[in-house]
Amino acid sequence: MFCVARRALFAVAFLLMTEPTVVCFAHEPTGPEAAIRTLVRANAELDMQTLSRFMAHDADITSYTIGGRKYVGWPEFEHDMQEEFSSVAKLEIPIHELKVWTKGTLAWFTMELDYIRFVGKGPDQRKTVLPLRESGVLEQREGQWVLLSWHESFRDMQLGASLAQRPTTPSPQLLVSNAQLSSATDLSGEWDILEVEDDKRYKATLDKAGNGPYTQHGGRFVTTKYADRLWQGAWQQPGNDREGEFELLLSEDGSQAKGVWWYSRVGTQKNIPPREHGGTYLWKRLTPPPSAR
Image 1 (cartoon, one colour):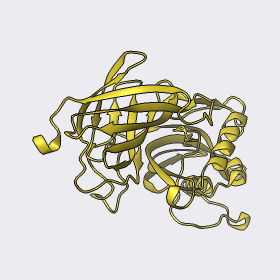
Image 2 (tube, one colour):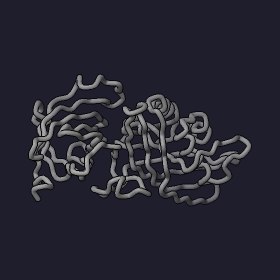
Image 3 (tube, one colour):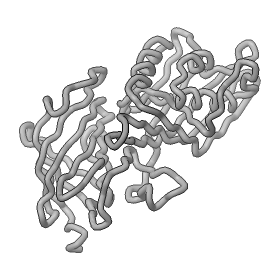
Image 4 (cartoon, helix red, strand yellow):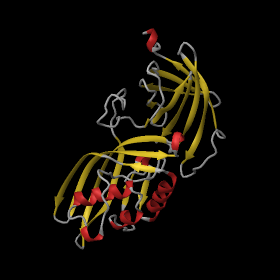
């Protein structure tokens, strides 16, 4: 289940949605694949009741989500799911691949999906895409298939494949936003990043749209907006279970950027006031700006 609850970014679910079908008690899923798809659809429809019915509540069942997050039993997972549902405007969870194997009353599966979160409304609405891979085990109990244990992680990603370049398949980047970028904007390359106050240095490898990994706790950046050299985005560090946002001003020659970063979540602590806790950034391009190559 994807625990993205903003955590990812969050504790949320994991299954996906292929069509807006309503699950009816009179027509229960008849196989493990149908049960998985029902769970995904329930997740996308913010339907906690159906999630509860198709997931085992055994006290000792252990599951894992992104960033090393561990769940034992049902209550803690339910709590995080409720928080996720209350924090989003809507969810979309398209499945790209699902394989199921069955032996007797047990079944196991692998799956690839995108967990797409929409936060806010109108022109201020923000979209975040988390490409995931899932695996898990189901058991048939009293005629109904229920999910026992599951594990999820981020898929391997090819940097540089943007949503616009692949109109039929969501972009395979950890975080992908609906960033407002001009056709002339190119943020690609390797960047040396200094957190000034803590004197921490690490490197980022970004694609044209400003999305990509950096070498600090398995982190990734996503650019949400770029205009008139003002560069805005979000960051996530699964390795220490933190996430936040940043704002930079790119130099006229595109060789460096200066700005600030701040937290939006640290572990289970959420709703941190914007810009109150963080520091300052100094970014330097290690590869020539695209226009100079």
